[in-house]
Image 1 (cartoon, helix red, strand yellow):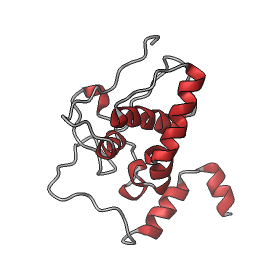
Image 2 (cartoon, helix red, strand yellow):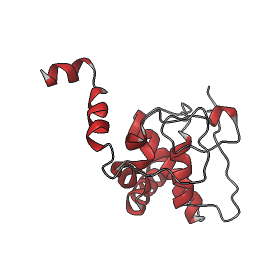
Image 3 (cartoon, helix red, strand yellow):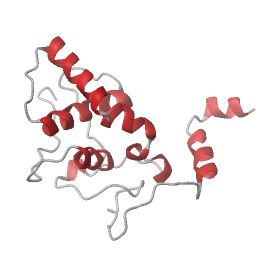
Amino acid sequence: MVMRIYHRQPSIILDIIDARDAGNGSPEIPPNREVPSWCKCSFCREMTNEIEKVCCKQTPVNCHSQLREFNTVVLDELVLEVARRMREDLMIDPHDDNYNRGNRHVAYRQYVLWIHGYLGAGNRRVIPSCVVWKIREKYPDPVGQYVGFEPGRLG
């Protein structure tokens, strides 16, 4: 019966996990920080452009930026190094000598690949604020200067 429910409504598993994890090591929302009205997960921050005001739309327990898998697939330095080398080899992409900027760029790509799969040239997605800020915290710009979302050249 559970499997039939799952096949009809896959997101029910997230509700079950939420109920199970309620009060059990749930991620803590940083104190003294206002959560934007458009955020559901409680980990987003205000963004400079309207188009970037996007949330992962998960509960705090299942926020993409708080998942263990996120730390492995998107933030892990070795995973990012392998992804960067592969891209440089296959796409003849120049190496970025700025370590943090290069890792941010690769981490954004890893997130999109993890959540959306391969999109193709020029087809881009806005990355949720919670994810953007988690990546920026791990690989900061020394002066806090970030590019933000740039729409694809083809669309």
